[in-house]
Image 1 (tube, rainbow, N blue to C red):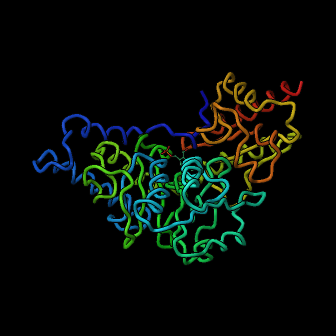
Image 2 (cartoon, rainbow, N blue to C red):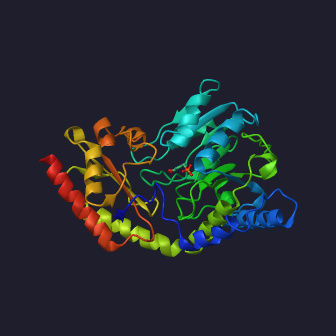
Image 3 (tube, rainbow, N blue to C red):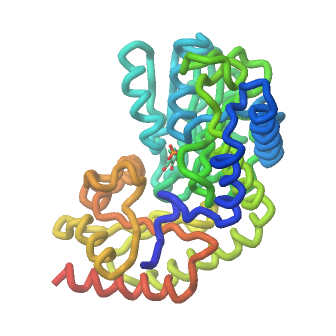
Length: 374
Ligand code: PLP
């Protein structure tokens, strides 16, 4: 199989798995227990917290572990308006992940909410963002888009909205491009381990020091009363090691993945009717998205199925929407037609992707398009 769906998830790093195993076997203590077995887990968790904080230039006390990006996103939106009472209005980008858009739909029954439009490249419309600059407003704009890879100018958006609370979903960008909470000026940020060769089921929420944030999930007093539930020591240790490796190797990984994406872009450049939805600049080095113009007669799902038969794993966007073949809300927000937004393919690469794999995938896609067009 040629795996080109690394934005859905990545293969876990062997070293990460090895580092996790002792915490599942002999060192199985509960980090809240006072005896040695528990204290060892506590020390490992606090070391992991410090390691992750160092990656993003945060203080360890600003990092809270969650079960992943979805929980971090839900927590920040829901707690800001409900438990913490920090905001009473929420505005989010039109191309956010469903882990932002779906909780927003629920909150819209109780609070004023707004969707901020994007331009044809997928960049947030700055002239609209700044109209939401007000205290007690939470603005959530993702750092990099999971379907197209476009990077939003978070630092600039912060300066346009100094009064509002600002959250960014950094699930796709974390570990792939620099992310500095001080420089970007965000109040909250969401992260996940499984997009960077870490384990599934673990992530983190950055909460800026000084914000009176209250737990959305109540129970025990874990995570300094901000997220109840026994800490998953092995997953946390794995997350921290995956993050440390991603940061140490960031430049060389990005150089490699960018060259793979550039090769694919070149291979598919002159195919009639194939439009690239990922601009050449200002995007993640790991994602490229194509769609078929005038796609009315071609079923987008058929492209992915044919790629699968050819042994190539790709997707049409976020894993959460594939399977139920809807038009991509991201491409629709960018002004693409319904048919074009349905006939999309996203390729996402990792440090393991090879030149031969890219060439095979490009050739397969060309053949598939010829046969589907009859
Ligand atoms: N946010 C973005 C931008 C994502 O791409 C994803 C996963 O695809 C998530 C959030 C959800 O993260 P998790 O799978 O850790 O819950």
